[in-house]
Image 1 (cartoon, rainbow, N blue to C red):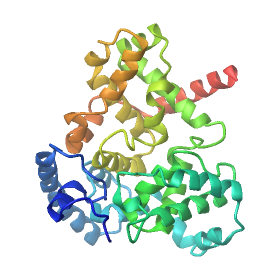
Image 2 (cartoon, helix red, strand yellow):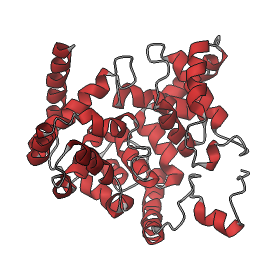
Image 3 (cartoon, rainbow, N blue to C red):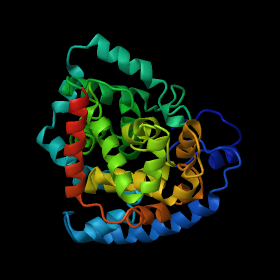
Image 4 (cartoon, rainbow, N blue to C red):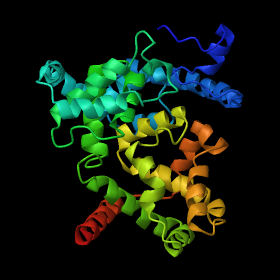
Length: 337
């Protein structure tokens, strides 16, 4: 891959990570990265043995391995397998190609082209000057999905989701099938015209905060801060550009295996861990600023430590509770409309 000139060879190595993202000057996370690489090296040995010994199937052992992190060399394989995307691709070997050969929908194409150049401006792999560039594969994935799902077509935010999938798989057909699996199973109706799934899950988070962190819920109500104002980007982009890249990928490891309740675990962990800081806010703008601040700093940069927290900090979070809260929130939203 030809990387655009961004300085000397030494600067380039220091400033561009393994995913193509430019690290900010003066980045002080090298120690964390080094420690995490040691963790990944140990995990890679365990994953190699697991994959050599048997066919990957759902089990407590696999769940435990995924929670502890998937080394990047196995991430594409694991995501494709546990999400069901691999099976879909194998059962429909020519489907993706046919989607790209369909008659062009000018409105769909225009919407995608408008967003395509705004996708990860800080990533060298999404620049036209890079060869090969991910821009054309990203365009293809989004057009194919728009042709595949006419109800959704294209919605802002999907470019970032598909972009992350391309970074991991480096394969547009695999990225298409993962995008389909993710939208169908993990964020249903997030990108529909009404975005009812997104609205519902934001309300569900509000209910969960009342149960788990009541003081923060009370503060939000006292100052009339709607949850959509502070967490909509968390949900619609699944923490892309909110949390550090490696932390997002670790969250997605679990999302593909355990489903959307992981999103609530992440959100609740951020809120509960930073409860004291949030409660310092005494007006509407200060609360909104606090919700930006809690997504930064050492806690989220230490992806391994953060992932341990999401399974302890919020306490028990049964899927039955989330399902019930979705029913209640959905009914409330129906009444309001």
